[in-house]
Image (cartoon, rainbow, N blue to C red; front, side, top):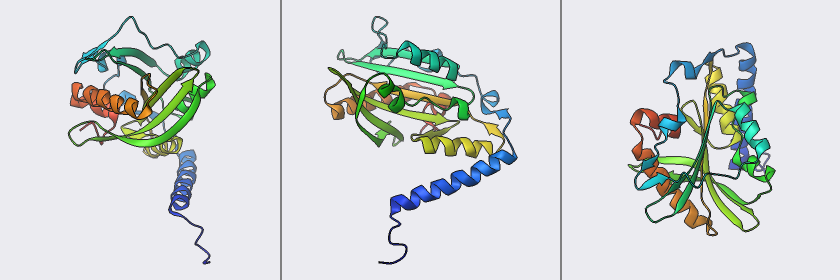
Length: 236
């Protein structure tokens, strides 16, 4: 066995990410960012950015999203300047839940409160969790995390992603790297967490339905808004 045979591709990527994080963290201590990226862009208003109706979907005002416990809601209100929760009804009567949180300061103290942490804190079991790509139409693919959560008889497939500045970041490491990259330019990025979920005992069917909802949502948004919600690579 050679001296480097233990370095699998996964370990090499992990080692590279750790080295980048370490070097970037050192640089961040030298020049702490002071300029907020949000101040250089149009103000984000979640209520207006996310349409109440699009592509056959409409907001169901009688069916609010109600899985967030009071203590978690209080935490989110401290971490984020704005939150939005809605339930949409589709053409066939199907329901889709949307939850969005936005903060103008994506620093260490206010980095996104992850659903894969939030759900277990409320008693859910995470049955499966994996990175995935969602086809948002016109050859645009969005990096997301698929998570299948259960609580008693409730079976909830979840699709979520983060946007740090204009970069999509699914893992905590990707979030930190994006934050540090902006920091090395003297900028404090804003951050948005988008979560789409539905009640479905078949997670694959749930993810497919959520992908259709996400594609309809992107296509209903002006191009100038898409990069704030889906990242620069998708929102062009």
